[in-house]
Image 1 (cartoon, helix red, strand yellow):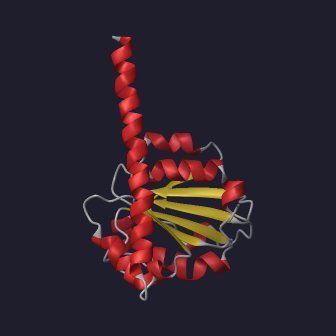
Image 2 (image 1 turned 45 degrees about the vertical axis):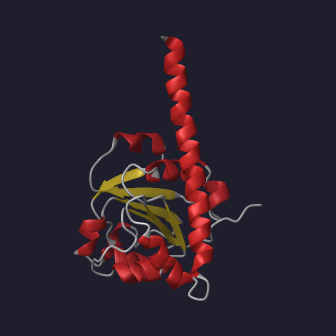
Amino acid sequence: MSMPWIHPWTSILSGPTGCGKTFFVKKFLNNLTRMSDTRFERVILYYSEWQPAYRELGSSLEFREGLPQTSDFADDPRPKLVIIDDLMRQSSSSGALCDLFTKNSHHNNLSVIFITQNIFHQGRGQRDVSLNSHYIVLFRNVRDRAQIRHLARQVYPEDPRFLQEAYLDATSQAKKNKQQQQEKKRNNKKIKI
């Protein structure tokens, strides 16, 4: 059963460093025709620091350092996907991210993926960004499980345990899969010796 994200959409991907956010984006982009109901004519990734992993995301991406500006796509009516990676601190002192989520997405025919390490970052306009997110993807965070409890109380105030249990189920399965992959790698190394 396919449930594509409906364009124009805004989303947050949140999890600690090294948890697989960039890998998720790679898979998302590789399956974009199934993940979104729109064929994007431009995909632009904004970043704070270049990562070699970006090369694996696809050759059709445009890469730009720093935060997006409205002028980057104001005169372009084509459907666009904007990915903002690791610009959490920079966005705190600028209204650009908030503007993307609250008005530019709809008015400029763009969908947005904001990749962050903290879903409740206390920066300027961050609450507006969160409240205007159509989709939220949370990755396993061993350090702060209070984030999911807090989000669950916001999203399902009458039954927060529903989201908490779903999150724990999904992230514990991901942990098991990762452990199995690591064990397989160790076994392969033993065989080679």
